[in-house]
Image (cartoon, rainbow, N blue to C red):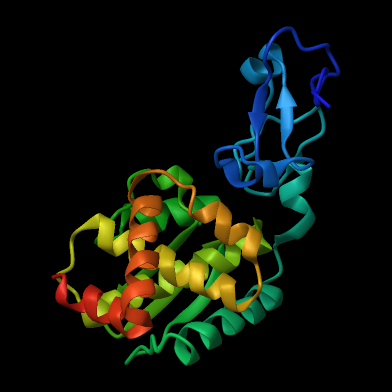
Length: 242
């Protein structure tokens, strides 16, 4: 049945509404029942979730660092360091045992708020494109290795972020001259994809393959490569692509 009213304000939709799916990816039939539709007024004026970008109603959740997140993200958001550490250990178990991505020098892990993440980005040797949108970062200073993740991420996004950043750490040790974003980001997304596969998160895996840009294009390339050469072939490709 077509949606006739805005999910936020209840106004009747005049013509098409604005559709927001989980993770902000393009609509597919699997999103039916989870997507929200908003009117033009809410699209223009409603506050946005700082995690997923979805317009929110009148009572968003305000975090201590002034971020606003929607109820859907807040439902599984990870704020507790012990819970985050347990997820980190679970992810690393997958990427080391099943994919063989061992690090010669291990990495510590911690959550950080948005202000701390921005400061880290400003001093990073490889600064991200938009520090205000940073959700994960691997920092190497001398022999110290620390992986940071933004506090308040939904659990599934935290898992993806940890696996993605661990892949970048592995690249730093095994193919430090690699520069092609289609390979660097595609490989890191593939590691996150394989981690979710091991955890049975098939819906999120499908959503990842629908991404645009180097993340989505690179992931699709790695999936095709794995189909032809297996996991060892993907690792070898990454190492010889410098």
